[in-house]
Image 1 (cartoon, rainbow, N blue to C red):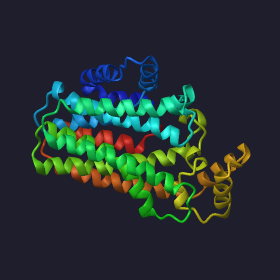
Image 2: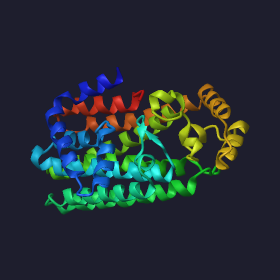
Image 3: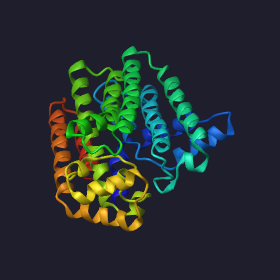
Image 4: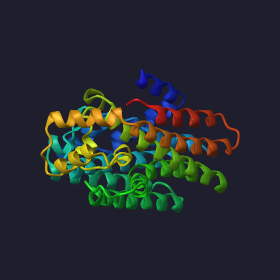
Length: 324
């Protein structure tokens, strides 16, 4: 049902998303059979293509041309894909979207080189864009994502972090990519500076909401829905918003201590999920997500009249209320 809703939201942009999908396949081609297979393995694992969609929607407020816009949309998705490959190495993840990760299908070395190759391809695609502002945005995005990964490693299993630490981390991990998708789309389509800033802020707020919902789903979804064990974030030491809102719970503190030593049993994992699901932390986290969504809607309201305004709202609401 959720996937059907997503397809309906994409329907207006389907021909252009199809063009981007073909470009992604071209971009990921490598003369190395191993890198080629690993890159395509990731591409064919699926993905919502949210970032290219935000590039295209933002560009509709300016001079829209898919042949030009694809050089903005493709690198944003490639940066996202490359960061996922590296993420799985850092987190020792074996499954993503119900399929083996690149690191588990091959090994860590292949995964790191594949991620680097994908980042390189992103830079190649950006070179087709004449506007230096777009290059600056994407360079800053890649730097911030790397900073975010380092911070996430430093924060693993650290219970004495606060909400500010968490928000700073998810901005760099997730929100920056959606923010940049909206900004680059606007810049390449020559949207005026005032509305470019509005679209950038919209992307930031939506990105924050997106990651908070993702962190909630990691606790309330089933293993099958997630394509990996529920509670994986906490098992890997990532202290997300629901846990920060209940970090003084003695059983959660004990669980984190055992997880940091790799001692957690399946029964303990299930007990931890019950505790989190029955707490008020889930509801509180979703309220914070809703606050970001409300800010995103305010930015949309200030944009000039355009048929795509309604679509921006619909996609943002879908992201903030999704179940997968």
